[in-house]
Image (cartoon, rainbow, N blue to C red; front, side, top):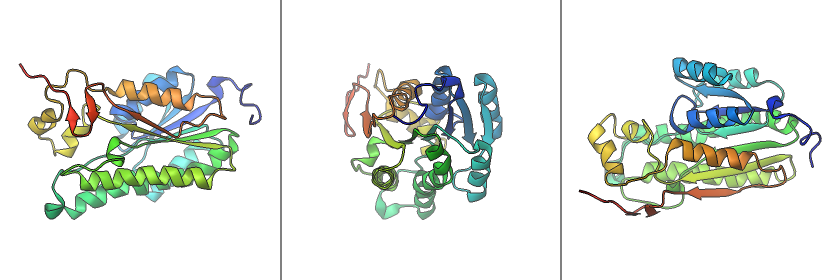
Length: 257
């Protein structure tokens, strides 16, 4: 076992959650804080992360993961040791077929889901190693495992998230670091679908129409917290999690009155 892991109190452990201003990120920050972690809440929207950090006794850092200077400032704030990194910042933009794809939307998705994840991981890796039992948990998606019409840009980016996770595990095999990925299916949050469809509430609602119980941000946060709190020799490589109603990307049980 890594030195001191079992003897260190939970209150001495620190976690970083990116994309913590809403949805899965905010829920994960709350769940980790409830487990005794000091959570550094990182996101672009300063007012939201400041309110969240105040609520849970954490630390707020305004950070756009696609900005190298923002990420460097985050690393400076974290300091020399970090126990858990949850790379949650991500997003889907648009749903056009490849023949009508928007290049800027694709660039944005790759920048946040892949480049941003890399930049944060690269910057915080020394602190994770220094903990003696660090954990990197990347928030992927079932879209990172199967293609669907209109989703090529997002599925390509989330396949990138998965492959970066797999590669990190190979590259860090001899380091005191676990690399985990969670791949959620249908999760209903306040913003994900709304952002994807540029504020079109009707299109956002249609994603979940007739689905009695899609997953919630708390469901994913609960699973993430379980993954990162396993004993340090236990690595949950991948956890695919869907609502019962979703058998596959294209196979969803919907009930309409």
